[in-house]
Picture 1: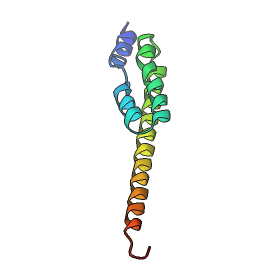
Picture 2: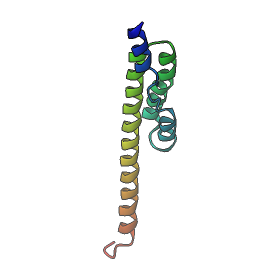
Picture 3: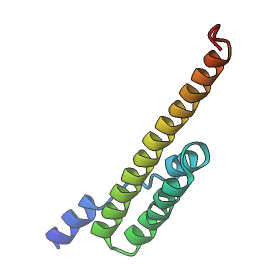
Picture 4: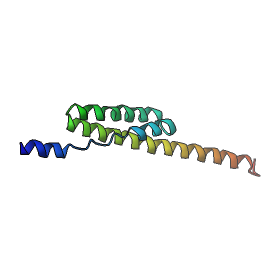
Length: 97
């Protein structure tokens, strides 16, 4: 009885789902990788409520990983796009053209 109560206390809080973050990243940064984050985020509560605590934690970690990868790649690509446009803009006004 004591073991099950400590197990209940250990699993009293579900792992973070990362659902909101992955949706925002999908809409603003990188859709393909953000979708992977959303899929993993959607699994967290279902697994947790089904008593699969280790799997829910793993799904939460995967959602976090793919959300952060999508965020970084999205920001890098947007920064590169802006830098490329800026270099084209400054080249258009060059006196050497």
